[in-house]
Each structure stands twice: as C-alpha cells, then as structure tokens.
Length: 108
Image (cartoon, rainbow, N blue to C red):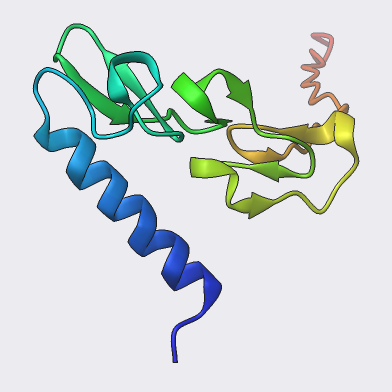
C-alpha cells in the first residue's frame, strides 16, 4: 500500500504541476499570485515554483522548523538544534589541524 511519504510526494508533485502550468496566477486563492503553500511566485518566470530547499509555507516565507530540513522540510535531523542546517541537515565540523613540518638536515 502507499505510505505517508508516497502521499506527500504525490501531493507535492500535483501542486508543482498545477502551479508550474499557470503563467499568470497559481490555483490557490487568497494567496499571493495564487501560489499554494510550499511554493512562491517567481516574477522572472511568471509562475509559482516550489520552495527552495530549507523553506516552506505561504510564499516560502518560513524556514524549516527544527528538527526538519531539506525539500519541503521532509527530512529529520538526528542532532542538536545548533548542528541542524535547514538545507543539508546535521553538520559535522572538524577542529583538527594538519601541519606539515620540513626539517633540514645540517650539512656536515
């Protein structure tokens, strides 16, 4: 059977297809240029387009809430809030240094 993820993907695909097909206004009323939640008006292309990765909501005005990230906030961070990036998820930082020493041997 279909999972919730499949249903979410279908709904997103449907919204994207409907919004992409409209050159002057999207299908959702009572929103800017008729763009549905999860999409925003692209004035250059004159159509509604899906939110950029890490953003969601009306006109893509909200960052993904912790612990979510990614396209339509569908991914989950498995790390602390300060390490969760809305675009790519959990960040890993290294604090080590690589140091190369060259020691010259004195001439005899």
